[in-house]
Image (cartoon, rainbow, N blue to C red; front, top):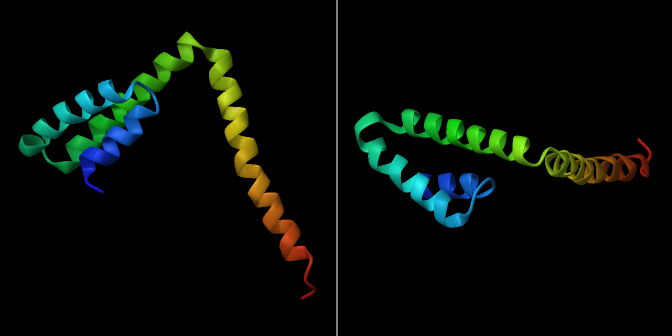
Amino acid sequence: MCDTTRAETLLSFFTSPDCAAAIAGDLTEERQHHGTSWFWQHVLRTALGLWRSALTDAPLMMLMLAVAGGLLLAGPVFGGVAAINLFPH
């Protein structure tokens, strides 16, 4: 997977796929002049800015999303601990 596709995927979590493709395309054009580290730094800054915007526009929705993500992470963790404890050492 190339850098542009990864950047589009990351940005599409916070904005529409068309807008994410446009932002990633603009940053890809500048990457030739500034380098890969510059590219990823600006992709992450843009994602952070889009996340902040989403947080201020819909704080309750972002809180529910964070709780759902935490629950989805905790389920397999506790399931793995339970499976390990089924077998004696």
